Every structure is written in structure tokens, then in C-alpha cells.
Amino acid sequence: NVEKSVENVETTVEEKPSPSQSLHPLTIDAIEEAFRFRAQNVTTSPLRLLDSNMEWFEVQYSIMKFADRFLEKYTKGSKKKNEEPTWTEEELQTIGGRIVGVLVRLDDLEWEWKHRVSTSTLGQPESPDMIPYNQWKSILGLHPDNVEQRCTKTLDMALLEEKDFARARAERMLALFLLCVEGPAMKASGNRSPDDSEVDFIQDSTQLNLMMPKVKE
Image (tube, rainbow, N blue to C red; front, top):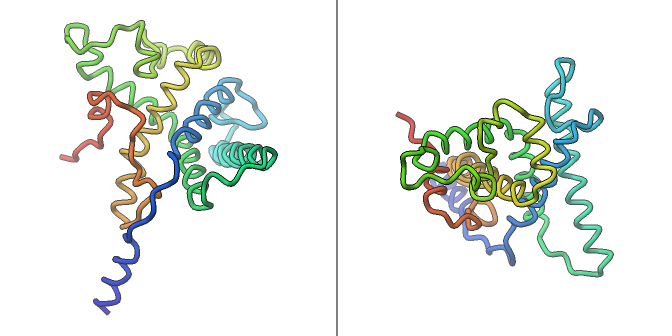
């Protein structure tokens, strides 16, 4: 029935009220915390493959448990302070889904962002747009000098010890996920997230353009 199909689509894409506050800060907090936890390489709750004997489903399970614990800690903290619930159940599910979505794709997102920056004007020494290497951590969320590929331990230590670096990196991983994964998936399915997958926490237009989905040739 064509009329019913149209009705279903209209119902799917109907206007939703915007969240009372941004979902992003809490999501970024979680990703930032995950960087520090992952850097400790805890074998009982791995957020990455630690050896050849480990299966990917173990990592996926740990990631989901991490997201659950993080949100549980947040909601319990709100209850202890007798605060009203900040977000609806749907919004909390969206935050949880984004935490998991970023963390299960973290290796790919990290590689993709490093590759895009390195091959853009931001990473070319002869370009006027080039970001000085000593500012890569705070501005781009990347470790300079090919440390990303060569020395995971050095990268982990930097993320453990340098909050600004971890924060900038978490923001960029979330932005890349929203623009290249969640946003297109929502559009293709005719659904909408509570905040329309909008990236409003990165102001640099050059970086935002660099994060946009690549056009398939």
C-alpha cells in the first residue's frame, strides 16, 4: 500500500524536540576516559586486541560494558545529588550508542584522521595552512612525528598524561564518527538522532571540511 508507506516515512522523519542540552560533552568525556583506560591495557577488560589469543568479540563486550558502566556512574551521581534526570531515555541510548560506535571503530577512525590530516594542507610543511607539529596534539588531537604508527606505548602515555591531547582527540574521533558513520546511516534509513548528528563542538572549518564523508567515485 503506497499511501501507508508514505505515512510510515512521514512518521519516521517527523520533527523531534531538540535536547535540552548538548549530548556531546558527556559522550566526549566517555571517549576521553576510554583512551586512558585503553592505554592501561587491562587484560580483563580490553578495549583493544592485546595479543593473538584474544578474540574481537571480547573487545566488543568490554566496550559495551565500559559504556554501560560510564552511563551508570553518571546517572547514579545525578541521583545522589537529587538532581532531575538531565536526558531522556532515548538521549541516553544515543549517547551510549555513540560511545560504543566510536570505540569499536577507534583504530579505523584514528588511522583515517591521521591520514586525512597528513595528506592535507594542514600537514604539508610548504603549505601556509600547515599546523606546527608542536601544536598537533592540542589542535588536531594527533601525536606528531609518526608516533601514531610506530610507538603505541608513547601514544598511550601521552593520552594518559596530557588531558588536552586526550580531549582534542576524543572530540575529533566523535566528529568523524558523526559525520561519516552515524549521519549517513541515519539519512539512509530515514531516521533521525535527537540532535541530528550535528557537530557543533569543532569550530575550525578546515578541519570540519576534512572530516566530511568522501565522495565515492
